[in-house]
Image (cartoon, rainbow, N blue to C red; front, side, top):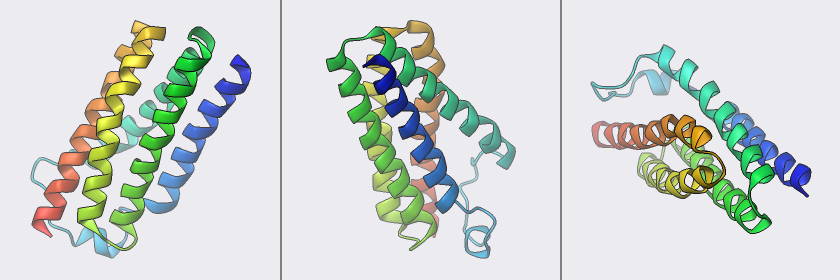
Length: 153
């Protein structure tokens, strides 16, 4: 069962990676015409933080599947799936129909779900939980960025 739930966790991260890749497009003309918040991080930061986040999320999922009970593992995977759904809703709403208000709400909900992910991860491994903190901070920051885009555009 631990292998199965580890595979589910990795599959969820794979969906996150693929979905983000399908919908996020910062190179199109629409995105480049937006008024960005003045405090937006430079583009290269995104290229560093997202691979890190995806790797740590995968490590967290496997760590939980290997170390915690089935109840905790299924709780984590359910919360992770909900969080990913909100993150992908943001990506789709922001970059496709350009619905910035819905996108911002979705990302704020995604950020809210990072806290229980962090708490459950800490039960399995404090080291992995600490490594997951940048993901939580990044999603919170991204929520504020999305809000900034919504207000300026």
